[in-house]
Image 1 (cartoon, rainbow, N blue to C red):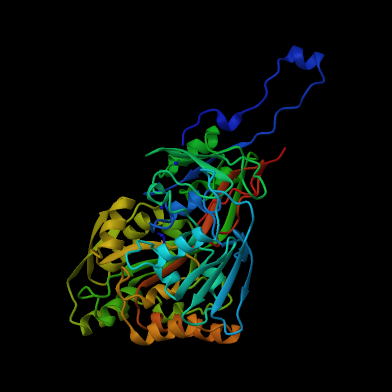
Image 2: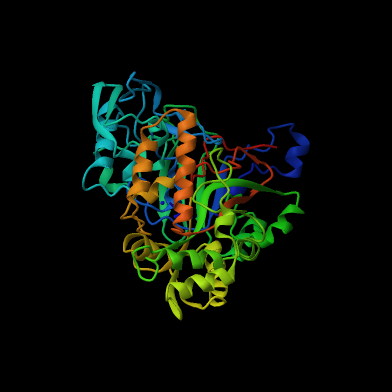
Length: 502
């Protein structure tokens, strides 16, 4: 989710071999050394560094593919690719997946990674007391067994053609039982970078894993620096303290980068459905007429223009517009304040005051002010409380103590969260749950499309949440850097292919 949320190594990003003018005149010597360090800006600091035990997107933004790896992984185009598993087979009935692991893989502490670690990781994720934020990914697993040192058999309770996709999530990375208790503060994985330090409130530093089992990375050091303020982010980029800010927090300042040849502005798409989430069990929001009224009170384009400076695509359901199964349902909840007023009167819900809890991102804080003004026009007052990320996770996501909140759900193809009655917005629809259950066991592409579209229609008709816009991925990078992801098929700053070029 998104909201499933950095460093201070001064001078490191400008490490050059300095020669005096005299030396250059006398020696046709070495060229300037190739830069191999990078500073990455991030808006939010992760609450911990264990992707298997936390919901914040910022965790994966640091460690996905860099520190931790799963059986499979997402590529920059959203495709599912081999990772720790070099290949896999599926039984004819679709019930058994056999994964064949790469040889010579070690954890960062030098211990071997083998089939037993995979068994441990998947059993831990699906255990009754699991704290995995995406426990539903593992719910269909009947058993996990080591069929050999480098062979793992996963037996499902029913066929699931999406299982390799599920295993590519950051929540499904492989960890070792010996180090699992320390992952939150000292992560040990199998990836091409090892954890170096975390100065809380400032940065996390990773260094190249010289014993990496796969293709070595070009970067020797990567520092993730946490800068939530847009003006501070702008100043850090201009000063060269930050080399890349993949999700730049102040889109209103992008034009200044566009006119500067030192930088490249990259606009891509994300999996982030940005929603005005409503507590469906909390009166008066347990009345669909009130939820529909709120949806009709919202002018999406005003929010996109005012909070995102025009970056964002309007949505009418919880599905990414770039997905081929997307259905445009925005007209179902079009801006119609008069209809909103009539629905509130019909529901006997006049003179409402609702609590709106807002996490730190600009889309939430700025969007919340705009939505509060729009709701006021139809007779709904809001009490806004700005929360830090850890507070939001505890009170809203965990404690369900809210009426309204704004958050971007950045997990890929995650409409199935609406089939979880205990999820933070507490939507409980048995028919929808049955629909998602059918989807989970369906592998035929045409039928999956039909079920995905039915699911979108159901939650739109129930006005579960106010669907605002698909979050754009707007980044600023040094023009000499290549290999950063343009789009965000998952919440990650994958540095495995990043390098400096002259």
